[in-house]
Length: 413
Ligand SMILES: [Zn+2]
Image 1 (cartoon, rainbow, N blue to C red):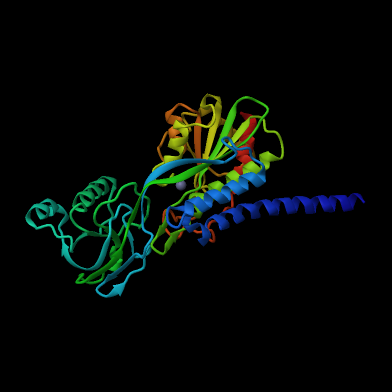
Image 2: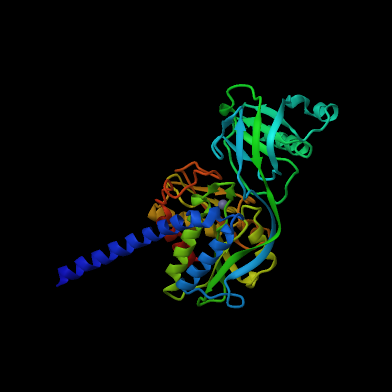
């Protein structure tokens, strides 16, 4: 009988462990599926993701903070590419996302274009001497690897010339996409230098932008009442880059992983009364410029003075090289607790400590002197803001350890 009990306990533990890791993977699989269109602003990806998350909050049993809805709406301006994005150079069709991307602030261009190569050292004279012609693509070849200084100089040039011309920017730099809150009249196409094997004679392009002004999007906010007055916020942004034409950016690591961890934490705490009030926020429009968190801080649904700590989770799908803590020096106490826990349990080989940085949703909170930490994982996949950030290759091999670390941190505060 006793042996039988031990055996069943073992099965039960095994099952609960298995079902937990499956739930991390399931959430990442679901959020990165085609249905959510990269959780951006084409085909209502963001809205579908918000509806899904609301439903999860309800099933977990979180309380809402306003009018029986988990949604906190706000408006954004955003440039999108809902139609086809195609590019042919010398008759050869290029692969979106792999060979080229359109700069997020691009305007439209459709048809066959002339091309002119421009010397980067001489771009100003080109602006004054040549008659501006929108049927002429300017080509810049920046094949060398550029450093931070030249990059910002180049970006400035791109932006100035792009007000008058469409631009083809040839570079060896890794292609990364983002989201813009404005658009220029013409497109900028970033293209990999190894794709251009001969001089460009013809350029056939189809890029159509759709600027969405005052588009309604949302944060998803839920709460579990705790024993004490103070509140701990767990946050993770659920939006991603959406679609560039037919190409989807799934955003598995950034940040389906963080949302998956947030939902698992919510589910864990829903089964007991937590020590502190716990507020779970899936922020919207992070990729557009940390807009959801900015809106929340300016229109809080809770008393921000009661916030003991915010733990923001963004890119937590790896971890073999450890974790990084942003705001580590500003939040010394919490950081020390994390260090002590890790010394004991040895979840991560390294904890990298960083100062304040405006690189995710914790930023607006720390700007208002609300205690906030941002944790991300290091190592593993290199995919970032590209179409290769997919569920299949995301290890998620340390996410349970990170969950335990956060639970231990919260109980030690
Ligand atoms: Zn992110």
